[in-house]
Image (cartoon, rainbow, N blue to C red):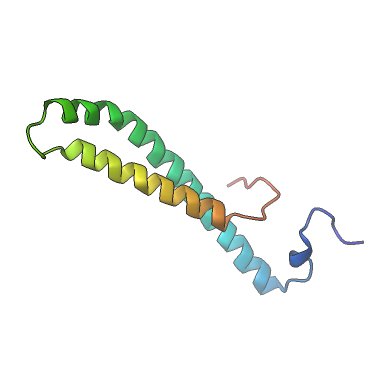
Length: 94
C-alpha cells in the first residue's frame, strides 16, 4: 500500500528524481532561514533608518536605502523559499 502522506506526483519517482527533489527543498529551507534573518535585521535597522530620515540633510539617507534593500531581499528570499519548499510534509533536522 502506498504511503498516503506522500503526494501522488511523488510516489513513482526514481532515486535521482528524489535526490533532486530533496535538494530543491533543502535550498528552499536555506532561503527561508536567510529570509527570516534578513527580515529580523531589517526590523532592527528600522530604528536607525528612521533617525537617518529625520536628521540627514537632502537625499543622503544611506541607512534608509540599506534598510529598504535588506527588506526587499528578505521578501524575495522568503518568497523563493516558500516556492522551492512546496510539497514538503516533514520537518528537516540538520
